[in-house]
Length: 513
Picture 1 (cartoon, rainbow, N blue to C red):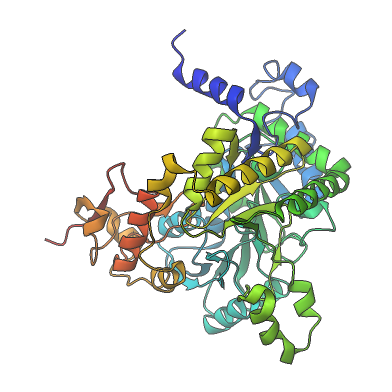
Picture 2: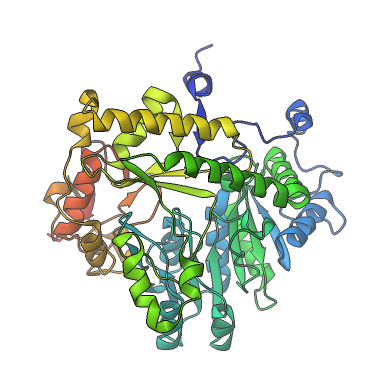
């Protein structure tokens, strides 16, 4: 049979050695054998005895499974999502906000948040996250930033934050929900990367425990669940459930997969019954890997492990501590970190994260979740085996040896593409772009296609989104700065993917002529 996609998937499965990317079941290792045996037999439709996702019976199987999920995750009610967290984000924002409403939003949110804001023609107020000098990445919003923005915009209808980030940082939202409630706002948390947090006391608390009114979690990212599966949690009686259900019916398929829904049910049961133990074992494996990694010269594992230390110090000591650890500034002491997320920083600045990512997969069969200019990010879940971490450590040591002996000849040209500016300076300018039009106003504007290198001063006609992590660096209607032009050109040159740019580096801008 001529089946190119099926063939490509089988080929990948045969050559992959270690999976540090989603989905969390790790090539089926975390899925029950009984599920495998019955997977085609349970590919059913809405029948008298299988219930209906869009209109579940009070004593039907779907409804009972969703109630068990609500108990396990600690929400008032939970809805199964088979179109990913994206449809949950859409439903949460559109069920709580209307056209013209002000929405307070972290500028490093996923593109689905901005798409929802665009759909309803709302007015976003952006909050800027902190910055980590060591890894050259955004970390998290400070609680002070969120609180100040809420107080400065009492008219806002909702506050939307991402927690944890792709890099594992968790902003401090304790008490924020109470403040939002006082101002009549909803706190909506995109916790796509945090579905596992509720199942271990060794990790930051979930947003639901901290009072989020609505929370969206991707099961397939960190739990043993199939791709596209997610949960939408409703955690406040102020949320109009009929509106949530209305938008879920709009944004989810009318023929939801029972295989995907049963995967959500199984993932919940596994974590509810064994999650504490499994996460404890995972953290032990990660700890052993970190010990192995201590001898690396060109890499370091990001360790924001000084937060508790800093919190125990007096206010007078905090600023000194922030500057003295490793001789470099660290992110704000008020944020937490998901210790299951492995962020490996390339300390040899001749080499980009994109290059190391490519070497790991081409030479060693190690597939990471994402890379950027300075880091590779590994999603480790409870079904990563000890051997996975051993393969990763061995590969990094071999690459480290090659770097330090000058043996990376075949990758040297790509590796040594230099940056035109610091990421910190880029973030200062990118996240405060000049907005000429509102995003929804651009839809009906005339467009032209030009190369990103010629885009300085042009008005973006679509989001420009390095993917992953899926955070828009420019929104439709915003003016494109020279800093962004240089940055995206670098990302393109170093092998990174940018949604909104074609393979030749072209993008759409508003035609003002």
